[in-house]
Length: 398
Length: 120
Image (cartoon, rainbow over all chains, first blue to last red; front, side):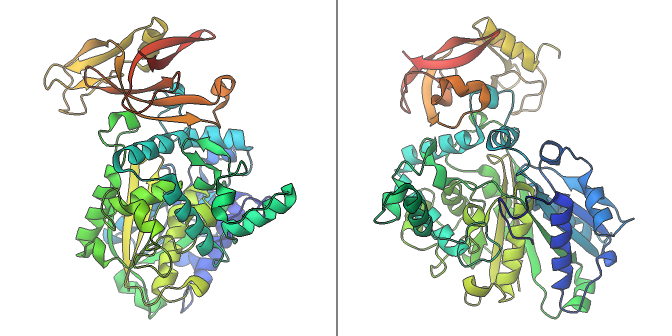
């Protein structure tokens, strides 16, 4: 995968970022890999039409990485675009039709200013009945967060522990957008403004952490990012030709839910996350307790809190408490977002689902570098489209 | 089928009415109206108006708005459980809390009205 960033790819289009990620993926295969050995390509890209005024992007990427004439398809499922592309690639191989599939994701967001990016992201919600009512995309998550606080007594301070932890992990990840702790950022911004902050909370409670949609502030939200990620899937029959230490897909699941939040009974939980993860656990023949670590969709800090509950790692209502107790840190009993998550690693929307797979792959092979866990057995990737109308989950093992 | 259009819902809002439908097979209430009942899958739907009174299910106050709502920002928005047993999103006036009683009001916004709720 490329580094995720808001500036370093300024001169590049999605095609250059995707090609960079594909070259790196092919180069990382132990016994060598020619991209032209692939039988198909699936691409996650949420909004090329808006961001780059370019459609038909799966054919464009296949052309640029030199794999014509294999079949391609672009998959759009908002922020879950490449998680769904993964599931599509897995099904294509499981069907027996293909032996090798390239799955990638990309998003070039920094072509637009923040206002137009906000407008584009809001297209992933119900334009006619939510956005037209005054909701923004962060507003929908803020409404879920408020419902969670109201029902369970969870608190904003618990969410700050999630942001602090994800930035600590991001500091150890050379592909992350923000390789700095929140304290590093507080000192940097403070020096610029002539302000001093005693600790993270001092900074997070200040005006520099602007309110976005109550109770969510700037440091509860993932950033706007450019980037691409690519992985190569191979059937059991051919995988051994390419590597002696493959990572196996143990299970997958996917579910949908109502577009509009107001059509759901419970706003403190994503039903599609519960369903997709149970499908994946059943297929793998395991349960949530067998998962060693997970990359979950933390587009907002509260989304990570809810995900760790819905995936079955903690009881409903206790995700925030678990984060505050350090249980989701690298040295905790259930490490979450070991690569910094969307919060610190960045969130080029269509690339996120596959970037999670890259992290899970590296962790399971012991190649994650400074943020490597000790001997993980199963890793999980959880990718959410918008406010939970699409969720994909995969479980990976060694 | 043509009566169940998105544009019909917003015409209703312009006339200060909340128009949805009801499934005559299973009793499922819908607001806005749909073409297929999401509960039983049948299409035996009949028009139903809603009074616009209910309680706040959840809420937020948006400080970074979309351009259309810039002038009223920061603005409240939330999800309302209507008394008939169906929920809808809308703007919130006068900062009600979760669980508070509210009623629908219709705000002038150029040619089209906006749906909002305020404490009763």
